[in-house]
Image 1 (cartoon, rainbow, N blue to C red):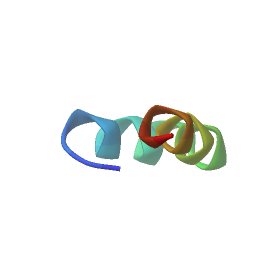
Image 2: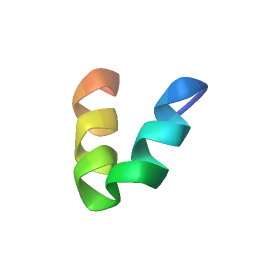
Image 3: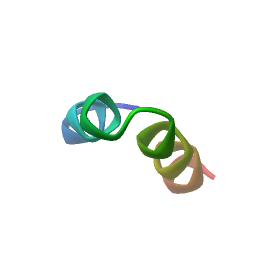
Image 4: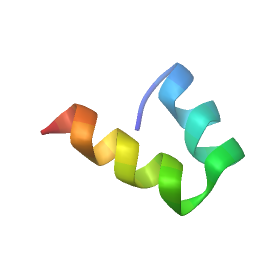
Length: 25
């Protein structure tokens, strides 16, 4: 998670983390 994605994770918790992982992959 980097940049704006960090805020997304903070707002959505685990869901945000999963989304970030998908983006990385």
